[in-house]
Length: 192
Image 1 (cartoon, helix red, strand yellow):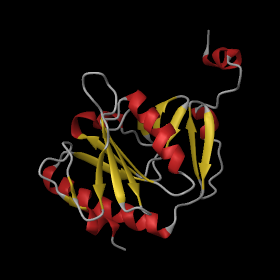
Image 2 (spheres, one colour):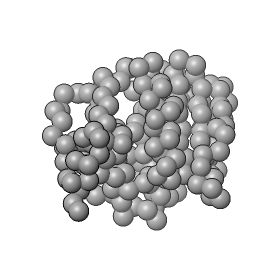
Image 3 (spheres, helix red, strand yellow):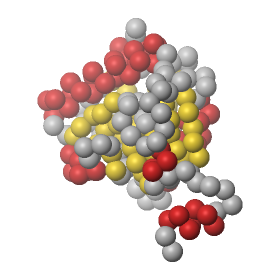
């Protein structure tokens, strides 16, 4: 039985990576989760400022410590033929860099960062959190620009589920086991 006959047996048609690559380059973020198309407009300036600030902090740390690669949106992460996402920031540890191809990431990143907007809040907090948990992303960081806070989900090694999130407020310092000795001052990340 091939993939197309499996798709046809499903009660609804699932979109695949082959469909994804046909989406227009229209400045919007297109993703497929469980075969369903999701689209969001380009991010607002505040979103981009937070992404830039965080990327600069992590990239500087990685330049010195050589622990892996940090990539930024737009960069396709192909988790399966029916799950293609475009996170804001992606970290892949050195030992997992084989998942980086010329075109995209083909596999599970160690860290995924999403910066939510009012339009994407439920999608990022519920659907994508479940997706990243299901595929085994080690850490999922959700930045909320309105509330100036971060939720950090860490995958439990024993049952492969996300633990209760650690919550960091805008005036706190954030740490991650993925980046030993790195202290992320959130005041710097949330500053314009």
